[in-house]
Length: 185
Image (cartoon, rainbow, N blue to C red):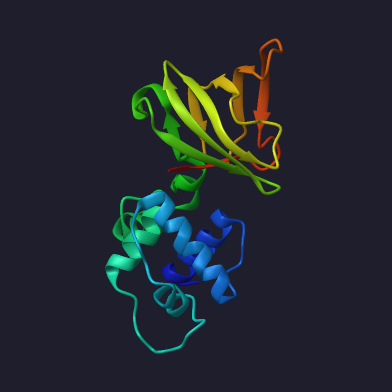
């Protein structure tokens, strides 16, 4: 397997989705923008996956973006990591994390997603506190508040002191089986 094929496979693993149709490539394009705030054309992605065969080699800049999507600094970092023995390779897909106190600013918004088709938009209130802004297919509702200090992509998300309506605060786990993904909004 070439490094380019390996990169494509790892992206599909991260997305938990095979890229086979134009709609799939539009999905990746949207995810790239949500995570990195960079636009890559759907046609470029389709070319890279071999969906469109034009015999054009991908530009290094495109490979850099795809490597960054997986958590590497760039394509060169991805290639260097791939040359290491398996036991010494890092796996940024599993270790992409967000230390709330160090990396978020009051007022920032995140989108959390987990299976099956759960979506939750949250606002950081400061002091490790969050407020749910909107949600789909989850028990969390707009207006709920909770505490959280660390979000690790691909791992369950543990919420502390979840307050819903006038109920007593509880602890709650999101993505217990498949883990959560996060994006800045």
